[in-house]
Length: 245
Image (cartoon, rainbow, N blue to C red; front, side, top):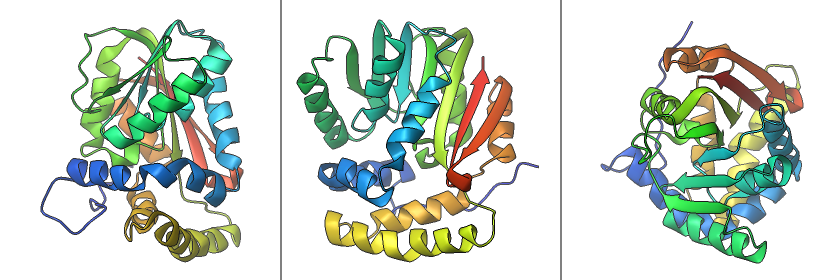
């Protein structure tokens, strides 16, 4: 059964979660890709490959990558799917700037376009995209249901959504070991490297508060999607969700 959990924000501040998340990612942007590889021991690359692989049978020509960050998932989508057009949106301009440099280096800027954009107020017409992806971004939405409904709106009928997100391992003793790493060791490394005291503590807290597994499937269905499913990866550290408009 779907449960509402306490809203978790990066900082103890009066501004909105959206503003805090934008500020947090602007702060850690220069270190983001390096810390992803380091803290996940490189497994995050495999997760992205598997997530994009879920779209291969659908052959989307136009794809929207929400919360695109530094465009890692968009690049993987182009590599696997050969889309004619990919649009990545994010609320952190610093992350987008790093992503644009990455695209220029790979000569992908004519296919992948990065724009400042808010998941809950997407500036695209209805029925614009064949597929949409979100990697490690939905738990940062200010209003999860509104964000999912917006993605549904801009997808064409039959369009696919694939979400890659952290989840909570359930298996003993892996659950206990992972929680200790995620709660104590990862924030320490992140704090020393990125100089942001809260960013990687927020990561742990936001994962604990996120409605994962069947609860997120229910949120997808509530937003208007059908055929929703989920597949845990790496003993439940991460989960791929997929659904259809």
